[in-house]
Image (cartoon, rainbow over all chains, first blue to last red; front, side, top):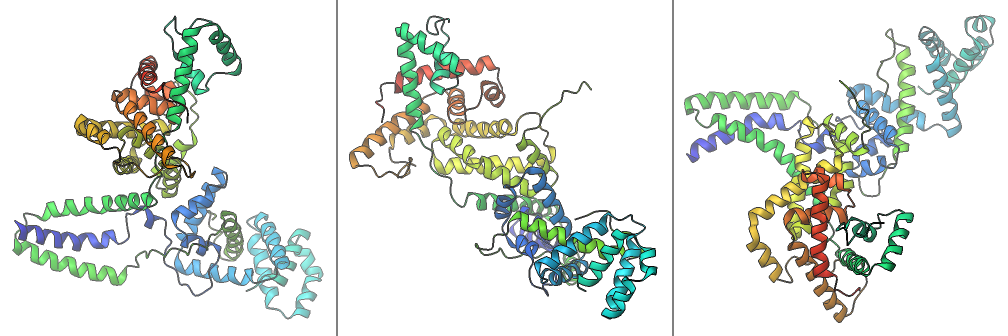
Length: 169
Length: 162
Length: 195
C-alpha cells in the first residue's frame, strides 16, 4: 500500500539520517574532522581541501612506501582531538613565521631532543621552559653557570640554549 | 626452424606481427620468410591485420566518469540501508509506528545538537595544489613541536607518531 | 603450509590497502586502469555509453568486494575477468539483433574522430570511416571469447597465461582461440590498404 510505504520511508529516513550523516561515502572518509579555523591555513589544511583525485595525483609522484606513510600521518593528524589539533596548529603557525634560518635551528635541536633518552626529555624540557621565562641577562647567567654545565651534557646544553633562545611560545 | 605454415603453428607469425619475438628469433623468422612463400604471405597478412587494428582508437573516457562512479558508490551505500529499513517497517501498524517515529525524531534532534558531524570541507580552488613533500615537511615540523611539548607532561610522549 | 613466496604486484598491494579502508588507493587504481577497462569494453560491445556504464559496474564491483579481496592473481587479471564477464553477459543479453542494428547504422555511437587531432580531408574521412567499419564488423563477427582474447592480446598486450586466467581456460585453449580469430581477421582485413 502506498501509505504504508510512505510511512516506512519516513521512518527509515528518521533512523537512517543520523547514521548517514557521518557518511559511509568514499569521499567523506577522506575529509578531516571539523576544526576551529582560528589560525591561517597550513599546508595540511590546504591538502585536506584538495579533491581526493588531486591528492592522489600528488602522492603518486612519490615512492609508494613514502606515499603510504604520508597518508597514515595525515589520517592521524586529522583524527586528533580538535582542541589538541588547534593548539598544534597555533604553535606551528608561530614557528612558521620565524625566519627560515631560525626555523632550521629549532628543527635540528628538536630532532636532537627527540633522540635524548626518555628519562632526560622532561628534564631538558623543564629547563627550556624555565629559561624562556627569564629576562635575557639572567638567562645567559644561568646558561653559563657551573650548575647548568654540571647538570646537562654538552649536547643537552646546546639543545637547551637554542630552544630557549629561539623556540616561540 | 619448423615452418609455421606447414606445421600449422601460427604462433610465431602472430608473435612476429606483434613484435613479441626476441631479436634473434625475429631474424631467424625473417630468414625463413625469405625462403617460404606461404609463410611470407601469412606474415604479411598478419601484419596487415595488426596495422588495421592499430587504426581502431577507442573514444576518450567521459570527463565525469569518476564523478558518476563515486556517486554510484555513495548511493549504493545509502540505498541498501534505506531499502532494508523500509522493508522492516513496511508492515508496522500505525499505533506502533507513531510513538516509534516520535522517539526517532527526538533522538535525531538530540543527536544533531550533541554530535559534531563531519562537514565535508569545500574543495580547494584549482590553483591551490599542495605538493606531497610540502605536506610531509609540515607534518615533520608539527610532530617535532608536539613531541617537545608532550615531553613536558607527566606522561611520556604518545607512542603513535604522526 | 608449503608457502611459495609470492611477490604481489603493486596494484594488488593497492587493493589490499583499499580493503583496509584506504579510499585513496582505490582512486589510484581507478586512474590507472579506467581507460584500459573502458576501451576494452568499448571494443567488445561497440557502444560507448554502454561501455562506460559497464565499466562503472566493473569498478563498483571491485570496490564493493574489497572486504573479501585476496590477491590470488594479478590485479589486472581479476579486473579484466570482471570486465569480460560483464561485457560478455551484456552481449548475450542483447543477442545478435542489437549487434546487427548497430552495424547497419554506420553513424551509431561513432565519435566524430577516433584518432589523433589531424584534420583530414573529406575523402580521407570517408576512407577512414569505411576502414573503421570493416574493422568493427570483423571484430564483431568473431565469437565472443575469440573477440575478448584478441582484444586483450592486441590492445592490452596481455600474455597467453593472463588471458587464460581471465577467460577461465587453459593456455593452449587461449592460443587456439587467438589463432582461429586471427585467421578469420586475416581473411577479412588483410586486403585493406595501409593508411
